[in-house]
Structures are given as structure tokens and as C-alpha cells.
Image 1 (spheres, rainbow over the protein chains, first blue to last red):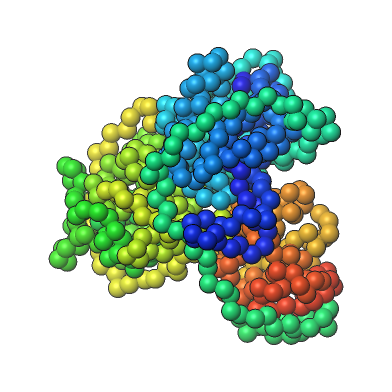
Image 2: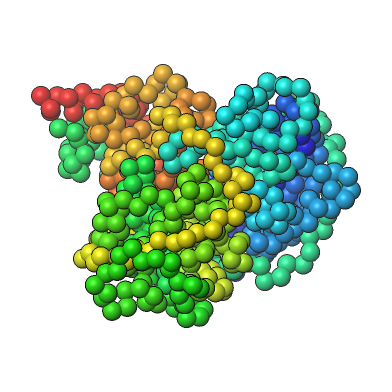
Length: 275
Length: 350
């Protein structure tokens, strides 16, 4: 099963956030970059699923030239190759435009002989938090889509015997997978015909760390490059705003166990101690 | 018209997050309606059957800024009572054998079928709400704004960067599709009026059922409702030290009739299940009190606890973000301090 994972380079926010001069985005100077933990899990899930079915994992991103770092990070943990759609201002496309560009790339790769049985995204990007690119991409491709999925079992048949990830069941690409995620009343199990799009939610698999050989491989990883089209009026953003500064100041109740009675006083005042 | 998709739990009660979304819609109805570009219209064809027609307070149905509900599946008497107390004028009850198993595409289409041609369609910012509104927006050819926290005549304000910043935006379409962020407002009850309930003859397309839910397995560790609805949450971070170090914090949570919430480091290390994770990629909580034990206060974690009314930090590092952002703090080892707090609670109980 050949799997495409769509990822996004995002600023790695650790401390206080400030805005750029125009107020249109956060000031990224001095910040490192990463991808969301949902996407890290999507990559891990893709690697496990491809290994169980004898396929390859390709990572795709729309972003600035520097986003190749995130593609190489994915290759370092086991993805086979990457696709960079270069745009200096990927945010200008908005979720509809991004989904369309990703769809165009999937179609173009198919014409070039590289087709994917499964396309994974994270459930939402860590920066824009739009919760919709995977779904829009599925509609663009005409594929079925699931979101909030945590694990995949290739070949799993509804109610039938399950071949879970890791138990290599012959290596043939499955036309159907079983997908699991946490729903409002328990673990939900879906059967999904391929090709399909799945938006992955953190929590089902543990992303692996890169090995030394993985890091070496990442440096030489084949990266196919595309140029993004000129963005239209794709982004409905007017500006960004920061929440008001918290004005409350901390009351230190004391040091160590001796301060326990003071804390219990506070809890009694709030009224949360069970009688 | 402002249509709100409402989620119910297994016993047919309206979910807290849906009650929040309804209150958000009711209290912002006027400005939401202003933002929608043209005059709202009743859906084509109108309702198929009217199960109950109220005393008809003038303009309760079809009013521009009336709050109407779309509910899929069983509609209990309890839910009708709850919805009426939340100021709902109209309930669109969507029931069909093909909708008994969850299928995002089919459910979203059913909601869209009864949505106005212009106006607002919203849901709470839960996984279901996000998924359904995204499907609905694509099908309607509209944009969607996720995790909206406020609205004024300039546009919508929604959470981005995990809640550390807000995006101001306008959705210049006929139909404004959005989800309301958890804890963007508290549910408010009004003087109840009997809502009108409409049932429909729905047609479900076969193609929309190809991702229908096959089955659900109920596992206690999946349930986050205890965490998101607890009045008191005891948070535990890396400072706990190991998988076996949760004794004191669990005991404290028990004394408070509350829940344990953990940082991403804790679930990443495999010490506790992901369902207990609080933060940007876990649950967002708004308890009366959050007691953060050995949690430094990474921005992704703070995004999940901003709604806490009182924030208490127990940490060895006085300079930790969590301590600086707290209302009260104790500087010290969490095992010693929480152990002493538990002893003190037991001692006072006598």
C-alpha cells in the first residue's frame, strides 16, 4: 500500500507569542519550526501500514523552501521520499486553496506513475487549526474520508478477522482498511474502501525517533519540487489578535509540605473538597 | 436563521458543549445574522410534517435571528426540555434508518438539507462538530471557521496556534459555517417556550454511507467526559517522575471528586492514556479549580487549562510558567506537598 502523508511546517511556539509588524501573523523570527503531533502520528501510522503491506511512504508539504526540513525529518524516521510545493506564503491560500493544490499534486503524481492508495493528514494544523483540509482534499479527489482516526489495520474486514498493523499478512495491497478512532461513546471502528483520505488524531501510535542511518538517508532523500500557483483571495483572515495579558498575580502559599493547610483552606473556600 | 447542530449523549441528554454552542448562538444571534450577507430564507419545500405546533409566539419560526436546532437520531423528552430552556424556537429532528450508524457525509447532508440558503450553521468544536461542519461547508460551497470564540460586527474571532492567538476573519458567503470553541461561553437558561418540532422524510444517498461506522467498542479509558466535566482537575506532569508516581495526585483527585489530567509529556512517555491528556491536542477543560502538579506550563498545555476559574501550581521551580500564571502556588516537591495536602484533608474530615 503506497501512502502519501501531507504535513505542514509550523512555528514551534514555546514562550510568549508576538505578532509581526502588519499584525497578520505571529512573528516567527527566533522561533524554530516543527510539525503538529497529529502529523507525526500520521507519519508513524503510514510507516507501519506501508511496512505491513509492502508499500512506500511519501511526504508532501506546501510551504517555503525551508519546509524541506520537515520532509527530511519524515524521511529520517522511515518515509521514502518527499514532495515540496514551494510557496513563500502558503497561508495565503486558505484551507480551500491548500486542499486544491494538494489534490492537483496527487493527480499529477498519478500521471507520472506514482499513485497513492491512502492519503493521510493530521486532524488539524498546529498553527491555523482549520480542521478541514483533509475533508476538502477528499472531496476534491472524490475519495471517501474519515477524521479523528488513531490506528489503521490493512485488510481489516468489518466484523471479520483483523490483521492489525505489524502482523504482516502477505504483503498484498488491501483494497479496504479498518480504521479506529475515539468517538463520543467509545472506540469507533470504520471500514474504508481505498483509495481514501484519513485525518489522523494523536494518541494511537508513538512516533519513532530517527536512527543514525535514517538521518544519513534523509540528507540524500529524493525531493520532487513543484511551484505553487499565485494565491488568489483564498484567506479570509483580517488580522491576528493576542489575548489580553493575564493580570492576576500569583499568591505563593508557602514552601513544601508545611504549606498544605493553606492550600486546603483555598480548596475549602472554592468548595471542591468531598465531604 | 441560526441553525445549531446539537449532540446528545447515550442517554439522550444534550451535551454540555452543545449547550454552550446554543448559548453562543442565542446571545450573538443579532450580530451573526448581520454578518450573513443576505436575508435568511426558509429551506426549500419546508418541513414535511409538523409533529407539534406551539402556541405560535409571533415569529418563533423562520425569524431572522431565531435559534433552531438540528438533531440526528433519537429526540428524548429530556432533550426537548433542555433545548427549550436554552432558548430554542425550533427543533429539526433528523431520523432515518440509514442515519442510525454515524456517517459524517450522510449526517452532514441531512443537516444541510434543512439548513437555510443563507444565515448561519454552527456546531460545538468537538470532533463530531468539526467533521460535520467541514463536510457541510464543502457540500454547500462555503468556507468554515473552526473554534470561534466571539463575534462582532467586524467579523468572527477564532482560536489559532492552539489558543495562544486569535484570528479575526469574515466568511463572505451566503451561509456562515462555523464551530464554537469549547468553553467560549457558559450555558445560560431562559424562560422556556415550547419549541416546534419538525420531522422529515429524508433521502439518503448510497454514496454518503460508504464510511458508515461499523461498530463501537466501549472502553473505560476512552472516556474523556469525566475530565471535561469535572469541577476539580488535578494535573500531573513530568515532575511525577515515573509511571508509578501517580498515587498522591490520584488520591487528591478522589478527595475532590474530580479527575486526573496530564501533560503531553506524560502520555508521550506512556505513563497514562491519551484520554487523560489536557492541552492543544488533548482535552480542553474549564473546571472551578485546576491543580497543576509538576507541570512547567508549556504553551500547548496552557491552551487547554485557560478556562480554569482558579489555577493552583505545585512546582519546585518558582520561575516556571505555570507558577507565574497561577492564582496560588506552593513551591516544593509535588509528592511531599500533595501527600501533605491529602493528609490534611483526611485530618480535617476527622
